[in-house]
Image: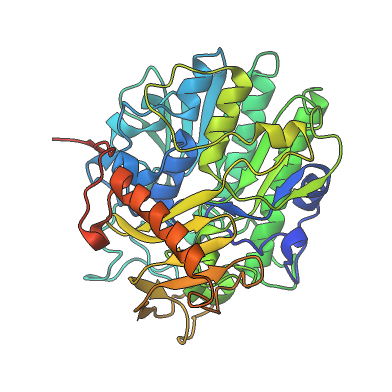
Length: 454
């Protein structure tokens, strides 16, 4: 999912709409409550999911606009390339956002076929109200938003449809879902990997006519109803083809909600801030594992986990050991097989902007360094598709939070736990030595160049 917050599912507290299919998956599978993305922004987060690496290790940062001549380097190994080497058919549907030039598209990264938008659905020449962009507006520089299709034998993708209106946006969830069902039907007799990256709930949100007005919450609730339907269609197809039990499904989001869009975006469930910030509301996202053959009863996993760990877990599952690089993901496969398994990960680095180390984590302790950040606090959001303003804030001193009893990061307890502070400062030094830190002018020893056109 795109910009879906931790609190946007029924099982995590959503109000005035229902997600019964996703809730049932959570109740029958494993629901992670402490699942982090390494950066709370689109391109960076997606690169981590696909490769199992911190995005700044690969030179990826921010959210790529159209035609920036940058993308995921061809030397990086993706989930698709790994699984393709094990005989899997591979398909990507939805938002890519790791370079839109032909050299960077999914079919250059191990996917047999791709259908979707090459970047975010708000990168189009249309204003918030759905009218054509005005001369000089931030949106007037964007080209028309293309729905692309390409297979691994093509050099240049086909534009099968141009997304010009909010009504066009309303077709995306069903288009992606039907394509996913078709792929499953066509590959049901062999191993397959499907990466379905919905454009929703990123603004501008839109729901098809069938779901409009279906929730008390308004359009956001309608969109969530359609997302839940999408998962229902996929599960129904797996079940009809008798492959549901042996299919592992991972459901998650790329970062927290874009809160200044008010009622057109979701909820961080009480965690601090949202998309674009290194506080928990920006990086903590929902994650559900569903695999009936191996997960016999529902359970909750409160251990620290990351989207980078998905690559490592699947690599262990399929016996992949030819990776040219040491990856940052750590397998949680033991969690699937053993409900009493202990934590697989004890630390995380929180990077943002250029290569700024904003915080580090050890178990339930989080040390935050002085930095400037985009805030949603003390300013009002806008509603109905329009964006409110941001507030710019700065942390001026080291801050220490005990996330076990203060998940909202409101009480700086650094004077109470000097020994914890010292442990976390040492972890920060390890991060700076490895990946660098622009805030302290450190370059890092183990960063690789981003893919870049001449």
